[in-house]
Amino acid sequence: MTTTDIVRSFYDKLGAGDAFGALGLMARDIEWITMWHYKIDGRGPEAVAEGLFKPLTAEWSSFALVPTEFITEGDTVVSLGDFTGVHGATGKSSEARYAHVWTIKDGKITRFRQYIDTLAIARARVA
Image 1 (cartoon, rainbow, N blue to C red):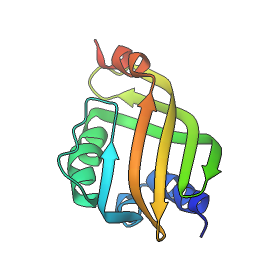
Image 2: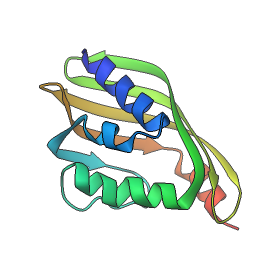
Image 3: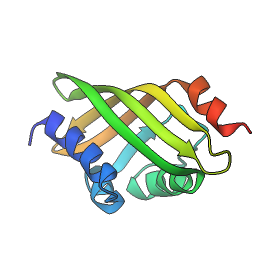
Image 4: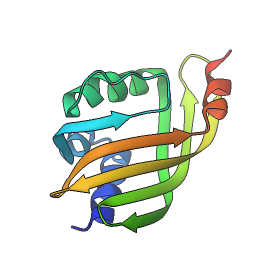
């Protein structure tokens, strides 16, 4: 698989509800940098699951990440797309543009950086 194929596979697995499969695409020491209020303590797929996947699915009654464009240079893939979701506590919908920067080495995701419209997310979180 190409670096872009790996990133596409991550989105596909997450969209299909296969969090375990998405985590399996990550290197054992993945560095995950998120711009939201979620905190990833340490490195590795387990840290991502505990600090992001679990609280994200608990907070949002539904959500989707839909990549619309991929830009690839060497081991780096930038995906541009849309986050859509319904906040579980407020019932408000959110639509936020994002940029994700992925680093792929030896067929595994080794680093992730997220940039997102945090204002659009914050508006959905406030009653």
